Structure formats: C-alpha cells, structure tokens
Image (cartoon, rainbow, N blue to C red; front, side):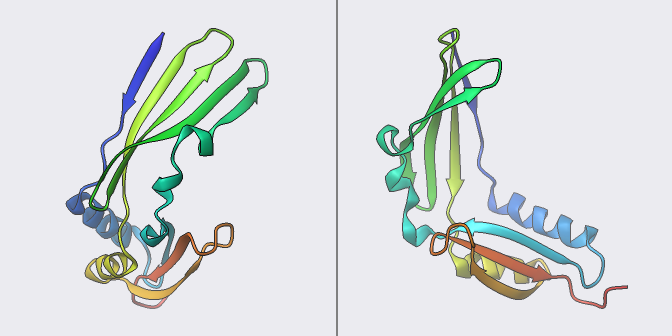
Amino acid sequence: MTANVAHVFVTDEEWSATLRGIHGALRSGGHLVFEARDPAQRPWLRWNRDATYQKLTVPGGGSVETWWDLTEVKGDYVSYRRTYVFTADGATVTSDSTRRFRSRTEIEGSLRSAGYTLVDVHDAPDRPGFEWIFIARKPGSAS
C-alpha cells in the first residue's frame, strides 16, 4: 500500500494575511516569536536518503523507516518528498512539501508591513548559524 499526501506552500498574500491576523489578535505590546531557516546555509543540499535516514521504534507498532529526498529547487522555493515505511506491514506513505526560504531582509520587511516593531533577531539556540529567531512586537503599551 502506498499513500501520497501533497502540501501546498504559503503564498505572499497568505503570509501577509497571517501576520496581519496575528497582529490583530495580539494585545498592544504583545509579541510574535518564530523561527525561520537561513537560506544562505542551503540545508536542502543535505535532503537525501543517505543524510536523513532514520529508523524509529513506535511502542506497540513496530518500526518506521523515514527519509527525505530533494525533488526541486526553483528560486527560493524548495520541494522535497518525505517517505515513511512501516515495517510491520510494509505500508509506504509519502508526503510532498514545498518550503519557501525567505531572506532575513524579506522577513523583516514583511513584519514591518504588517505593523510590527522588530525587537530582535538572533540565532536559534539549537541550530546556531542555520536558523533565526525573530521577535516582533505590536506597538502600544501592554495592559
């Protein structure tokens, strides 16, 4: 048995709408904190079976083998397939995804356009040099 699950990437309009929606839901002085990968590190170059293969044990369910395969790079959009093989019955599930790797400048600009004040950007503590942590604030006083 093989099943495929397709994922669609977030458009610029959806990204902007999401930032505006969160902004609208935050109290004055509230913060938005999120991580984003640094495209300069080109992590997709390591998205292949040899580099990403894992065999995981699922309590009461046997084991699952999983890996990633790069399928396409088109500008700042990177597509890949994640494969899962369930060893108990041989079922295989694949998930096709596309990620957009925005530059730091682009992310900072989108935050400002959505009405945020950028508080800080720093390296993710678990992956320094590969991911940024953005901290943005909705202007106003917290009540």
